[in-house]
Image (cartoon, rainbow, N blue to C red; front, side, top):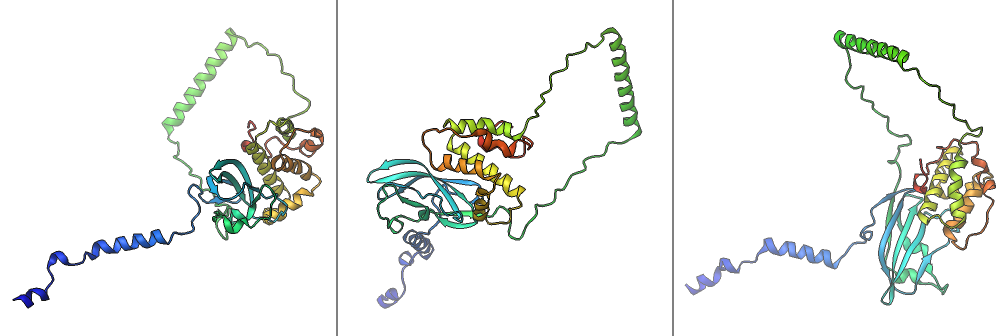
Length: 297
């Protein structure tokens, strides 16, 4: 009887396989973390800004590399820096110019100018930039217009006709008892509004140092989108398109000045506002989307 009892395991000593496997899977996940983008960094699309707030990086203080290569796939800006023990905490803003996954470490450098081997010492900062359109699609989807319900029927038409006739008769009768006074004709400006008129307040605020970096970036995006569309550079890579626009006689002056204000902030200095706005005098006021620049529609 003893050998018979030892040959069969008691049910309470059987291994709990159903509970052991989930614990083992959780341990493997915790010991082998992935390389996903930091929390709060959802994918963006080409030309749309994204942010990484509260990123703690070891070592000395870092800054964004100057935008010297116009073929760079990402434009990075350090919005704010805070001490964090022996490290620093950063708020970063980036704009992807090419689709794909990019590491923001490639666009940082030490602020004190010391020799840098900081990329290997920093944790990865991957961000994903999706294309503005699905792969292979070169035209927007066709709009489907709902014709809506039809209004018909003899009675409805008869009622509409009688209502219009009654309103016309009432207006005619009232015109005899209450003659309409002639209003003075408002003076019409000889110079119609143009895009230059909308841009002037923004440029004057930027000259005085009163335009925020977010408004400057919005104005730059609006002008880049307009000139790329006007000069048929939509299919040209973003870096090459920006390089062409910088040397363009009409698009270049204001874009170069915006880049100087955005990436080299400093004390206000006088600029020739009339020369910067000359290419926009004959354009309609709504030719460029200035909503992100803080301009009234």
